[in-house]
Amino acid sequence: MRRRWPKQAALAAALVTVCLLATATRADHHEAATGSEAATVSLQDLLERVRRGWAAEKAENLEREREFTGARDRQKGLLERAHAELARQEAISERLEKKFDENEEVLAHLEETLADKLGTLGEAFGVVRQVAGDTRGHIESSLTSSQIKGREDLLARLGRSKRLPSIEELEGLWFILQQEMTETGRVVRFTAPVVRADGQEVEAEVVRVGAFNVISRGRYLHWLPEVGRLTELARQPAARHLGTADDLDDADADDGMVGFAIDPSRGAILSLLVQTPSAGERIGQGGAIGYVIIVLGLAAAALGFYRFYFLIMESRRVKAEQAGTGVEDNALARVVAVGEANRGADTETLELKLDEAILKESGEFDRYLWVIKAVSVVAPLMGLLGTVTGMIETFQVITLFGTGDPKLMAGGISEALVTTMLGLVVAIPLLLLHAALSSNAKLIIDVLEERAAGLVATRAEQGAPGA
Image (cartoon, rainbow, N blue to C red; front, side, top):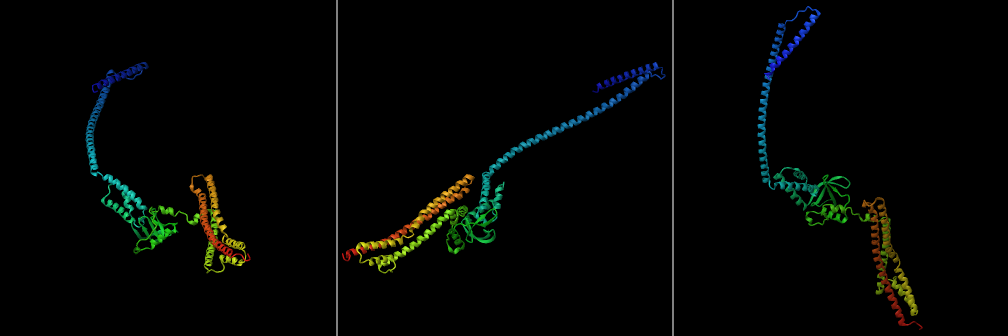
């Protein structure tokens, strides 16, 4: 580049000189043509001017060449330093990459060593977390939590932990499990807040039977883990179960064994048992037909017991009359009195009179028995009527609402079944009562017929007067 630049500068100077000469020539011709008196420039002056211009340009070009050379040298230095920095960074990169590979190998080796040293501890950690979670749910719903508080924190921490549990935590988990097993087999009396059926919360003495049932004042309680409170069941089980709760509530350590109705399902059976309708509620499910059956049954039963009492008393009087110790006012005495009153009649007449007296007495014994028999027959028929009306109601509900909700059909089905049950409950005892009354009446009538036959036979042996 340094060789070519002077030639180019000289060429440029020559072109400038030619241009100046051309300009001067044109100017001379112009002055000559116009007759100007301006002084002409000699060739020597012009050459001198060109030489000075060429020297100035040469100096300027040399200055530029020196600047370019200096810039080139500076750029070369920067490039060399950049190459050096690149080489240094590449060396660092190679060293770091080598170190990274070495660390990867060390890390893999350490992980393998850790897995070998952990062994079954990893599985044990998973088991601990699972057991802690399951135990927490069991403890929260257990009746023992109504007495023993603060066990859920450790279980929750173990269930959420992502590190190996400590020895103290494992011992705490073991203690909670052992404590729960121990408390399940104990009957404990303690004081705790109880929410009564009316919503009032009071401090009351309660008796916990293991992890199965809690009672207070002879009434069953329910544990609500959401609020941590014992609540009294709004609806208690049957009286036979509440009687055992009273016995347990009143018992002390010196009483020994006490009977108690326990729920082994920890409340599931009790919750279903309290939903069982009482006798009054079940009768109410029978509707109007059920009440009619009950009224008829009670009326027939009252009449039957009245007649049963009458026949028993009359049977005793007849037996006393047979033994000769009876009172005068009895059926046998009246039949015998008819025989005595017709002592002089012939045998046939006497037999007819005695049959008439027995027929009169038997009518008194059989009085109102037809009512009992009729009700015993009508009751199951009315139960069948209730069954038909209940099924009609059920089918109407199905027509309106479909079969999606069985509770909508429960009313009609309950009426159908309850009325049938009530009809049978009324009919069966009334049939037995009617049979017993008929049997007692027949026994008394048999005694009367036997005495009448004896009187007729005696009269026949003696012969009729005037025969």
